[in-house]
Length: 424
Ligand code: A3P
Ligand code: MG
Image (spheres, rainbow, N blue to C red):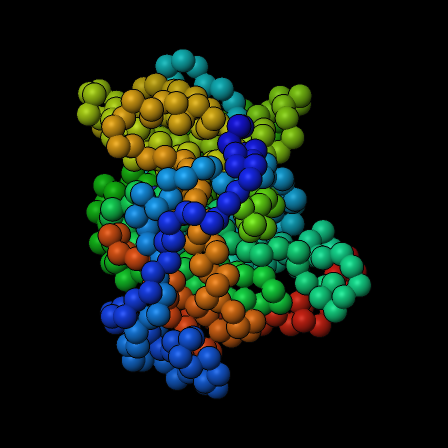
């Protein structure tokens, strides 16, 4: 995984173009408070649906040209733990939901529609879990993460950012995204910045208006996992069983992007069952489905859009390969192909104006610097809401004691009151 190593041994920020931009105009959102103009305002009365519309004084561009510099330092991600969510979405601080990849035959003919009507338990995606599972994992594993030393901050985490891998994937792909915007809520608490996604209005509408065909197609990816994964190292896949999307195995990794120390978690589909496979995350495998490719145009679109998402999602946690099932219109898998993540950038080389890994990583790095710069107040009830729409700059607003608050009381209290050594 070449790109995990430092690609820029002497990173210099001196002569690069700045992506930050001063903005004079109104940013057009339901913003509540401008941090720079009113830093000490005691109570903000506005929530997501109320409030004034003050101007924002800073924004961040997503224009690709600004991020075409040397690849930033991205340390090889290290797995520091894992957790599991069971069929009722209960948290366990262990790997009980880990699955093992079982290589299918060359012509698998998996019917991805099978079981959709009668053997499918779908996770309730109206329940917004925010960072809660990660926070539970942090409390249970705090001693692994705390800063060493004797200062008053010795019980704080030795980490700049805590978030989900999926949120970082959205940052990596933003310079190339033309359809879906995002909103990320940020809270600084005991020196660490927590980033949690807020569903946009557009995403909520899309979810409500999904067609039956779309609903069914969302099942296909999970069904492919069921055809290719076993629950035990010597087991066989059980495609006749019930498919329950509440169940998940998540890795927790630590790494560094430029000068940002990151802790994030992401769902892992399965691992190599070979006992001699390398340690996690290098033994993990990401499973994907995609429409079969029949024309040069389809191939080009696959390279330009799908491989970008696949690369970003797996590169971040250091998952080295994607196994893809290509399916026909009827949802039957007709071919399988393995994509090593380290080879994806070569595959796309001949696409004109294609995405570049360095742009993705530099944008993410600059975004995190931007967040450090604006989210200065250390307070669990303050949320900096960063909003982005394609072809616009990233803007932000500040919200105090608002419905955007996402750090739960149980986490704040435990982090404030007890020392990590009190954890079992
Ligand atoms: P595919 O990616 O093969 O379509 P993941 O690959 O990230 O582990 O996700 C597993 C499956 O969940 C996806 O398989 C897809 O079926 C479904 N899924 C995940 N995110 C989705 C999204 N944003 N929209 C639609 N389906 C999604
Ligand atoms: Mg997958």
